[in-house]
Length: 264
Image 1 (cartoon, rainbow, N blue to C red):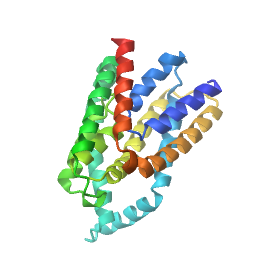
Image 2 (cartoon, rainbow, N blue to C red):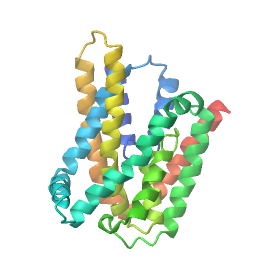
Image 3 (cartoon, one colour):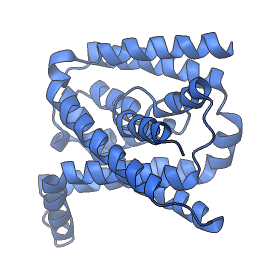
């Protein structure tokens, strides 16, 4: 891989994994605009490992408390952190089941650029609606079982390319009355088991066809992905209440329009 390809693809993964702008749409556009060869499964595994490292490091204190309190919950002590840990686990079940049941169908039937373009636009408008109409009065610790199931089911829709995992989970959380930052924080916590599951599947696929490969591009890609993802999470949460969702909605509409112009 060329150095520029490594940097661009790692940045695309690091930034679009957590911003509500659809990583799949960007990963469709990059090879079209650059005519680069496929980066290979090993590189995909590496940059996913980078984003996973970033989100775990960023929420390391919260995750530590959640893990301790989750184990304590088996003794009957259900604290707010334990409830949040259970919410992340339960919220991951729908996307895990949907991925197992519909993986082949999604990969063969739903990767059309036109589908990605439409999903990018439609779910961008839905994000705008949720941001404008949501009450924004609750935090992530107030989530009840119904709320978690709604957000979890919404996350399963992100298996359709163009939807955006972070975008649809933030949208659902805003509709349920969460504050912007709380919606984003819960979305990012939900990403941890999802990225871990997806990375595990990619790793198993890679090992089944493994061949000798230079490790340097993988390490560089993972590092760039991790640093950019960490910065993305930090500044997104810091600026979210000030800028709202409209810049991301506008970007999605433009991106969807570009895809329509290219593939219609």
